[in-house]
Amino acid sequence: MPQPTRFSYASTSNALPSTIRDHLKRITKNAEVNNARGEMAGVLVYGNNFFFQCLEAPASTIDKVYRDAVFNPLDEQFKLLKRETISKYYFTGWEIKYFVREEALQQFFVKHYGQNGFDPYLLEASQLDEFIALLAGLAPQRFAVKAHRAEVSELSHSAGRLGSVYYLAGFMLIAALIILGLIFGLNQCISPYKNGQLTG
Image (cartoon, rainbow, N blue to C red; front, side):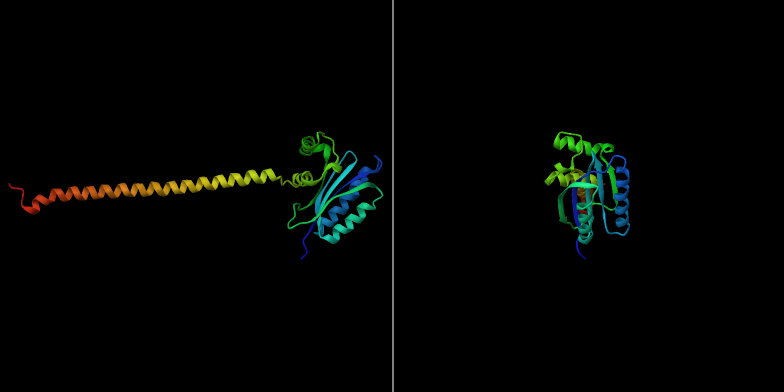
């Protein structure tokens, strides 16, 4: 089975304000049909009249989406941001996000570009990868913290288990010494009787 492809692009809508809602509805309907067939997953971000779309699908489906996006009369200034073969999907469904409603996306652009306005044409290299991970809810920092916590937890459990072993061994040693001491003491008390050293 061929590996899926991740495809990200930016474009500008030239739809009139009165028709942009219908444009978004058509995009959503087409994407949902493909997703229902199990052919495509991903996300579309709309803001400032810009589109950012990241799709994951078989290469043949991506090729069709690519052609449609390039020749879509309602889109212009199409820019391919990245296309890559992937080993696993980031997305399980398809959804649309409105930039003005997403504080996390606004903070991302402030952090990297010093602006809270949406401009997907700025996305490239590591910032693009981070943005996609953010959209998918797979922020790398979260994984790093989770892994670190798991590692610390495992070390703590290991240390606890090791401490318990040492504690039990120490307890058994003390118990053995006490028993030996009792046996030795009892033997000392009995020895005079055995040797006839005690008289009435």
